Image (cartoon, rainbow, N blue to C red; front, top):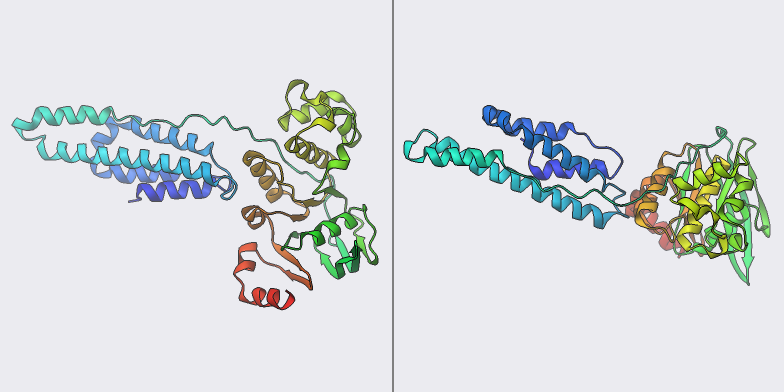
Length: 363
C-alpha cells in the first residue's frame, strides 16, 4: 500500500513538471479500503475530498527551483492533511473492529463510526497567482543548418571578451551559456543579433532561420513616448490595436494598461512587453540573455515552460539553476582563457569530473 508520503511526493514531483496522475490517489484510497469495504462505501465523500485537495494542490505547481517555497508549503499542507486523515481513520476503524461486537462498547463503536463519516479535510485556498501566457510558436520550421560561428573575436574597452570563438548550432539545440564570464555571452548575443560587429571572424545563419533577441539590458528599447500598443504594433502580425490589446491581456496587461507609456514601465512590465514582441515575431531561433531578470515566480514559470516546449533553437543565459536544467540540452561555458562545449544537461555538466578538470585548466 502506498504511504501518504509516497502519494504526496509523487504528486508534487509530477506537478512541478506539468502533469499529475490522479490514478495515484485512486490507488492509494482503493488499497487503503480493501480491508474495510463497507466502511469505504459509507465514507466515499472522503475520496472526493481528497480529489478536490489534489486539484487545489495543482494550482501551486511550478518549476522546482523558482517555486520552491510555495511548493514546500503546499506539500507540507498536503502531507499533513492526508496523514492526519489516514491516522484518524485508522484509529476509528481499529476501535470499531475491536469493540463493535462488545455490548458494553457498542454505543462507543457506533459513535466512532459516525465520527468516521464526519472526517473533514481543510481545503487549500484557491491560488490567486496569475500566470502570463508564454508560448513561442515559430512561423517556419527550422532546417538542419542553423548557425555557424567561426573564429569570432571582440575587444571592448581594451579587454578581449571573445577570443577566436567557433561553434555550430544544430536544429535541436537548446544551449545554455554559463560561467562567471557573463560579458562574453552578452557580447556574442549582441553580435549574433546584428547589434555589434566582431573585430575578427564571422557567423552565418541558415537560410530557414529567423531570430529574435532578448537583451540583458533593454533600457534603450523603451526610450520612447509610445504606448505599449503602439510600441508593439510594428511587430504584430495583425496591424490592429484590438488584436494587440488582446495579446497583452494574456500577458497580464489588463484594461487600459496597453495605453501606458513604455518609458514609465517597471522592470517586470518591460520584460513582459519584450516577450510579447518575441512571440509576435514567430521566430524559430531565440537569443535570450537573462530573460528571468525582474520577473516574479509565476512569470518565470511561464517562460520556463514556454521554452521547454518551444520547437525551435534557443541560445540563452540565466542565473536560475532549475531554469537551465529543465531547458538546456547543451552547455557552453566561457572562461577567461577559452570555451568548454558539451552536449549534456546542466546537472550532468556540473557533476562531471572531466568538465571540472577542463574548467580548472582554463581558469
